Image (tube, rainbow, N blue to C red; front, top):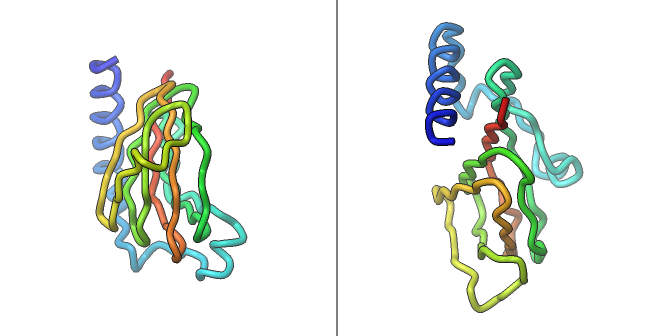
Length: 133
């Protein structure tokens, strides 16, 4: 799995460099807060050849997200704005939640379950998924 993941990441970086497509946050057309809350997510980048996809997801305020997780692949999640409380396991356990402020990153391997809680403001996440061949 480690070699496979390294191959995917290296291939993605090479493809991105060859395409010379850099985007700053100012270049990415994201919906306003009202539309983002309705849509929930926006695809920022997708590379089917390398099985990589990056989305921005907006979670509404004051929500408990019950245990969930990917059935396959590997996820890298960055908290863009808001504060996410996160825990790992198959049961929602408020006592084990860890606070992740903006800029925090967590990874999520296959079959691992996590649960979360949002506070008084929406939480915007950037999620990159790497899927197997």
